[in-house]
Length: 557
Ligand SMILES: [Zn+2]
Image (cartoon, rainbow, N blue to C red; front, side, top):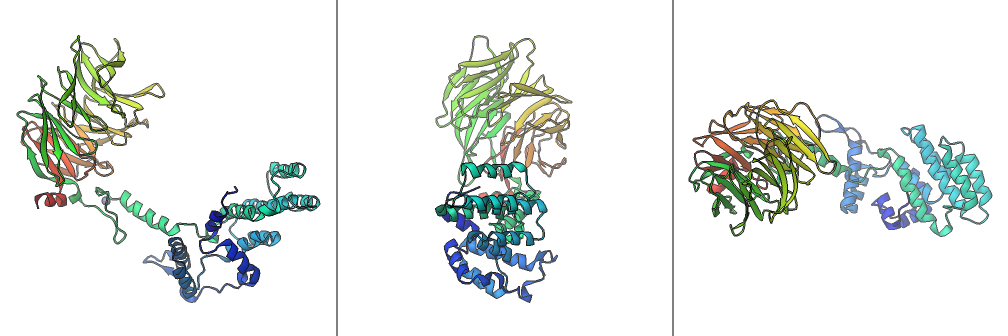
């Protein structure tokens, strides 16, 4: 690999060392290379409560970090105070010998590196001798000495023979020969390739300290059982969320619906909540800055209960439908009905979903016949899947990339249709499925079964056993669940015992059970942009808004 920019190559070699300065210094004082002061006694030993960290290594990565932050003076002070140098003698030696064309010394240095395998030593020596060879080819009268290098230095190395043959051919074609004016640039390129073969202690990898700290923080986040705080990472203490970061306190009860509330869903950007009811209306609620909700629009026009709502991905439109009811498309800003998808056959659309461009929707219907069709927002049908073998579709979802359609068929099967591959996968379930919900990234789905279980499946990876979640009550009604939390680490579900159940994704038993409603909780929705906020819809005609305890205190303040 030869990079184009000399200056960036030089910086990549060592932030503390500009190649020009280096060459001058080394030409003047080559003995400096071999007279590095040994580490002072203070720089040896180990650090940390478990004595896992080598003090000298620790200082070297600090030096590297100081240089990369631009604090070269501080780095020099640290070097002289600790007696530990950022650059290993081997690294300094490789730079000097490579840039000054001392090929044999360069190979001797490579041979002196103890933990380099014979194969790597051969590859490294090849880079060095190849550079020498190509420079000779590029110089006057260099053909004979180049041939000598090829046969006496390169040929004995443990290499695939093709490499040697290519160089032999170059003696005729002069391909890749290095002319005098190109030497510095090509030597730097060779040196970078050479360093790539060396063990990491020879040269501290760039960004090593940041990498170590970041890895430690990432591990803490990954192992945080109640993780629900996207914004809060501090280096001053170990990260750990508590149960108090999960929505658990009811801060608002919305009672504008005149009958049972069947469905509730936050908009994709989390600025609105939509609810639908047996009272034949849907309501759009606006979330204010202080996290309270106020009624924005009541959507009137349906003549039968509204049981399903779907936000367009851009949150500008809303679809509503219901059992034995037409599909309506609403403008979110004005609250007006833009379209009623009625048709001659009085088709009953039971569920619908948007494609990611907010221009196409897919509808599932089972009266007068079972079918799935897609259409645009003007109501024009685009594709139709129907026929005698078409099962009854009760719920639908489209993955956020628009590549897969997931549908609940015949109550007991999950069908995943991959549009690009034209394939279909069927996951049979043990009991009747009442609802389907997708994770925000579209990689996982959960289904509620009337056997009082929620199953989590991967959308893309085939598996015979789902993750199971238990504890809630569901036998008679359609109960809906959702993913939630800052990394979709949690699941929430309504329940026929008037409660809301929350699970951590890796645990079968609920971690939180919320009481407050007085009748069945039909549906829950977790705010995608406010992981501390959850909404629930109940037969008691209310919607409740739940907050994490510390955010709840803020709302009441
Ligand atoms: Zn956490």
